[in-house]
Picture: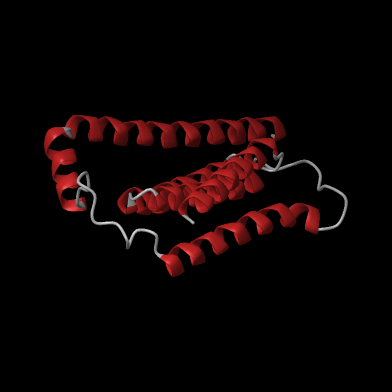
Length: 171
């Protein structure tokens, strides 16, 4: 059962990623990317890394995607036209991928593939991981946090300079 779930989740992550990079609407692309992150989180959980799965959902599918949506809305990136045709063409693929993820999640909870195995020898608790990360690599943590800060400031500056140029042209 684990092998079948692995391949289904792998296909779902690939399909969602392909849909993400082929969408013209940036908000739709972010939704597909969130779907891909959830599929990856389920893959990590299936492979015995529940902490990494939780981080995938909390950090990537949560915080980073909110940051992406904020930047998209701040830069006012929107498609110029709405695609013609029925609405199911727009929401059908994401609904299908989400349904696959929901079914896989229910199967993983119902079957509990990890219960037959003991705790692996490489398992590390979140406390031990945090202690090692912040005591042994504090400089790396600070560098990454500054990179995120610079990216946010840069996005603000890019969005702000376009608005100022538009105001100067109108006056």
